[in-house]
Length: 186
Image 1 (cartoon, rainbow, N blue to C red):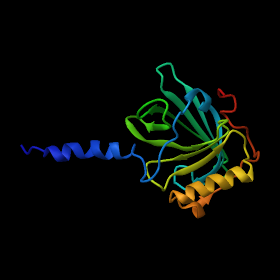
Image 2 (tube, helix red, strand yellow):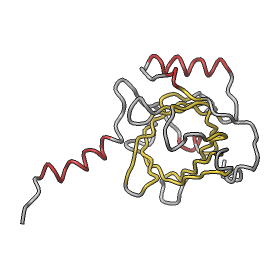
Image 3 (cartoon, rainbow, N blue to C red):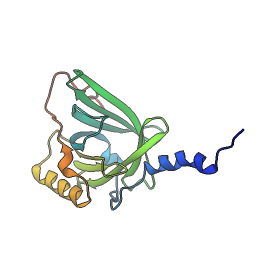
Image 4 (tube, rainbow, N blue to C red):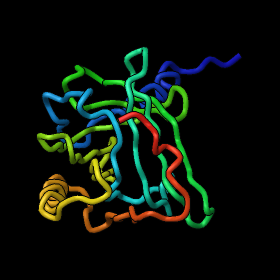
């Protein structure tokens, strides 16, 4: 019987931990207030990834779960499938609850970083990163964002080293079918 090296057994844990790290030079917002952040957010811009490819009218709904974690419902409309796609997950703080660094999971024990890197004082606009600079989302409480606010977020993302020229700006206008999570908590 061959025994595994302790390093082989630790490797998966190290890889999982790496998915909740901060990208180099990126800091989460301080004095984060979860209660103000909960509710519906509209996706204004994103870097492309297979799990959202082709989706429009993308929203994220966050609500507090009884156990203190955050329930996450992401939805988006796929014109190619003529259907809504919905992903349900859960998020937890990585450290102190007043720092905008959470980990989110849509697949059981596997978590990835959810880092709020910019947030307007009134909690109307946010910019979120993943564990590296290939993940970026710009969010708004409404389906549109003032050009000046968007420009500020784009400038900050560019200064931090995100490939802003690759951002996708998904359509938010009404299409066939209502968002099935429209009645989510706010």
